[in-house]
Each structure stands twice: as structure tokens, then as C-alpha cells.
Length: 211
Image 1 (cartoon, one colour):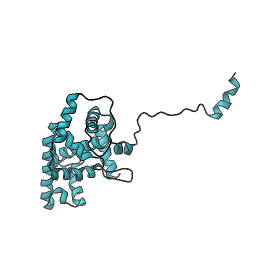
Image 2: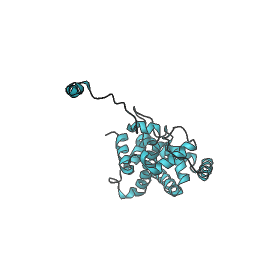
Image 3: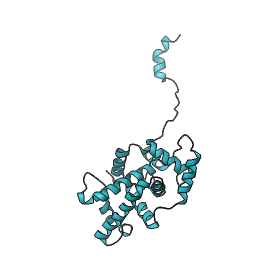
């Protein structure tokens, strides 16, 4: 199984289809209304209250992650969901901006995310004498492989596992509720079809009963 497919399987099995998750739908509606680029997410029925619009506008003016932290998030997102022949990567779908928004909208995620990013750089420095974003792709994958699969991970990587699990879930929530992500899983929603009546051979079989 390809890395993209295995990580996607892990994500969707833990989340369900993110597009059908009410919490994700709410976050995606806010992303749409506040124009987080670059994707156009699924439109969720129903409007927002004035207080919600004010709240979201305030959040959009704030910054939580540093430039360096966002660079690390971008690299991680694209390791979790890289571009392939079928669709673009997580960062191309605007996932780093989505995670930034969620960190501000749901502050309980701030410490786990920032602490996890710090853990990642510490681990990278320990192994390769440089921060995660400056490592080669192979070096980055070595670290990710040790924290991406909870059931196989060693206890010494428990903090990294918790962080990567959160990142994987947020990445999937952001990606699979954008048009790129929806197209990637082939979800078409409720679409009308055209019924042209019974086949000709069936009509012929029963035409003797037609008065």
C-alpha cells in the first residue's frame, strides 16, 4: 500500500469521512465565510449569527503560529497527504491555514500543537543536528515513521505519537472538506439521475400484457 493510501486509511478510519462530521462542517463553514484561501469548501446549509461573524473576523486578524511553525506544519501536512496523480497535496488545499484557524478557534489545541512542533524539532536535532524543516525528505520520513502508527510506536515516542495523531486528524479534516479532498475520495453527494424507463428487452417480454 502506498504511503498516501495507508495514511489516508488510518485517518478515515479514526475520523469517519470528515466531510460528514458536524464539527468539521462548522469549522469549514467558518473557513468559507472568512475566505481562508485557496480552496472553496463544501457549502453547509444555514447562516451564522452576527456574534459568530464578529468572532470569526476577530480570529482572522490574529496570528498564532510563527512563520517557522507554519513552515513545519506545511511539511508535515504534505507528508500526511502528498500530491499524487489524482489530486493536490494538503498544503495546496489550504490545510495549514485551516489548522491555524482551528488553533485560534479551539484554544485547547494550542499547547498540544506548539508542544508537538517543539518535540519534532528536538527529535530532529537529536538525530540529525538540525531542525525538522532543514532535514532531507528521507530524514523527515524516518522520524514520521516512528510516530505515525500508534500501535507500532515505541513508548519513548508517546509524545510524538500524540502530536502526529492530532496533526493527521486536523490535516484530514481540512483536506477532505475541500473540493480537492472530496474529489480525491470520489464523494459526489446526493446527485439526480435520469430514469429512461425499463430496458427494451423487458418491455418486449411483457408487452403482451399491455392493453
